[in-house]
Amino acid sequence: MRVILSKNAGFCFGVKRAINTAEQTAAKAKGRVFTYGPIIHNPQVVEKFEKAGIHAVSNIKKTGKGDSLIIRTHGVAPEIEKEFLKKALNIVDATCPFVKKAQKLAANLKSQGYQTIIIGEAEHPEVQGILGYTGNTALVVGNAVEAGKIKKYGRLGVVVQTTQSIENFMKTVSNLMDKAPEIRVFNTICDATKRRQESVLKLADKVDIMIVVGGKNSANTKHLAELCKEKGVPTYHIEGALEIKKGWFKGKTIAGVTAGASTPDWVINIVIKTINALA
Ligand code: SF4
Image (cartoon, rainbow, N blue to C red; front, side, top):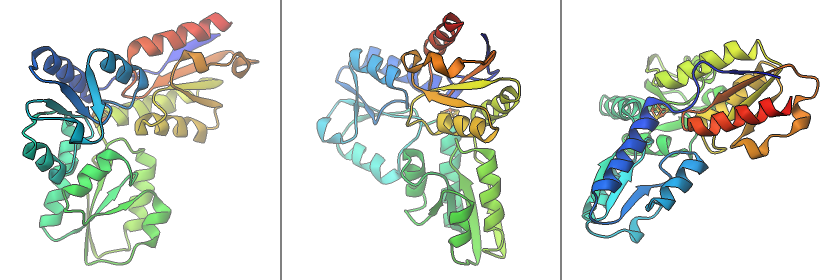
């Protein structure tokens, strides 16, 4: 079996930065160290952090004065950040700069009188955070069908979740075009997501099977798997090598491997070794 790793796969700049920030915080902190939600959407990294004493909390009731609380790459809404300050927590902001840009643009659009639209997954923490920057007035639309159902407005301002697929973004924007006489659109999909998607589309043309490695709750990993499936390649989204089944590779000669922006290199390497060992 020949295995080809996608040109752009695994940890992105924002995730590396968040992990370094968390490790440096833990090394210096006098109090306990928490992350607000899992630091990244990857089970292996979250487990490693738990063992190192960096705990993920979804409710700050468990934290106390002097504890450090790390805001992860997805960011948080301003009202949540105010709650952290009220508890006198040492806030360490690891929000990815690409997410910060989307938050700022959404807030500006709101203040300039545009009805803001966020293209993305309504329940995703990043989208919830951006929504907070519009005072919870933005509409979240997940796809072109949902966009087609919204009412008409005077002015619309659009941003997109940083990890959405370009294809979904373009189709959704197209269906928003007759919803207002004036529309401002900002493509806030991040560079890392764009590069991973472009590389995987090229790779999917050359292989018989695609293995996509990353957290099942990772938005960018899910989109990579969807893109491969849309290309018609048999595709499996796994979190680690233990999920690999020999039967998937029967009659196949070339396997492609890619990984989401929150998947560590060592997890990718074990997956590649496991596939090589099958042939
Ligand atoms: S996927 Fe993009 S937005 Fe998310 S952390 Fe990485 S660089 Fe930042």
